[in-house]
Length: 434
Ligand code: S3P
Image (cartoon, rainbow, N blue to C red; front, top):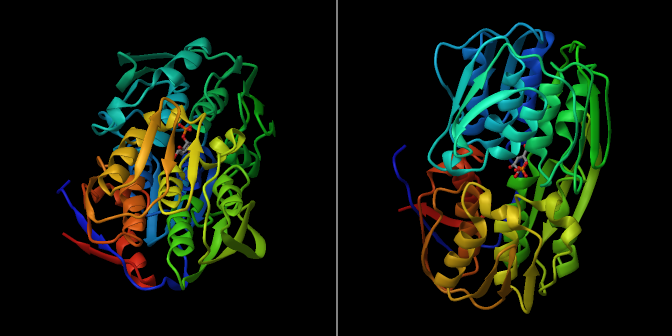
């Protein structure tokens, strides 16, 4: 991928009404579960990001016909739970942790062997967290020191297990549930804190008898899935950058249409409101079984807070945006209980702390979080380390900086938010290619 940098700088007040792209988590799962269903699944609002396209390309390699009649639309011709075909080579997950971890579970239940590979960032991320519990179900997955490539051996008889996870991870939970479709008996997953429940909800929407409450999910293997249509809500994690930017820039007022507000995703709303943000949910409704609302955000003056640890899993992808809100705010913000940030697309505690320091903000790094002393940002140069959310967070930070911010290595923004730069410019961001 060619390297790309941005120059970001204060723009105008952010105003207008926009729809951010479809939810990444839901798009991945709609392709996966649609592929395993009997019948045809039409996915509307599919995220045209590199991560979710990687998942679709992998299922095509596994013998599933997927049509793309228009941008944001996919028609998945399901092959049934037992209908996937052996691929002719390694399956490339690119930058997508969700693809790799969920597929590890799903492929462990097949008759054939497969190999999952990823880019340099994904190849550094921990995979033992899925390999070990899947091994307890009878799966055999080989990895080098717990990292991709993952060599998954098929033709194994899986058995259901009752598993209590060590880390709160929707990806690990989902891997076990997808393996559980192929296991004898019941697979039950208990979480230290509740995480996003899209796999459970979607299996249920496809007619699979799955039982779930916050923090626990269970299913019996051996049932079939019935195709259904999926309407993907707009991704709250993409909306988050605009929520923070409009809060910080005086004179701003933005409406973000039909954003997914599943409570397992909206921890940032609680924290921003506790900091003093003015964000209102209007036109609440349901889209594809998920709660959605328009989010209307107006500029407000914020103050620092201690982020309650119980909100951490519900805003796990929003910390880069929150760090920026904290940096541009009076007072001190404390984040604890968020060690998972160190094993995301980059070590987000280290990459955000380094970038904010380069812009003149005092940040203390903690093993599981950070203490951010709000202040006045100056211009400077920061490195996103190829992390899409870090790149977008610094584009937001630059809107309240005293000068230009050069952001290195931003091409991966296309993994989750294709067209971010044009959309952001359209509402008033100062942002151009370097
Ligand atoms: C995701 C779960 C989270 C999140 C990721 C998407 C999912 O990861 O950070 O962006 O779709 O299940 P973890 O399970 O590692 O917390």
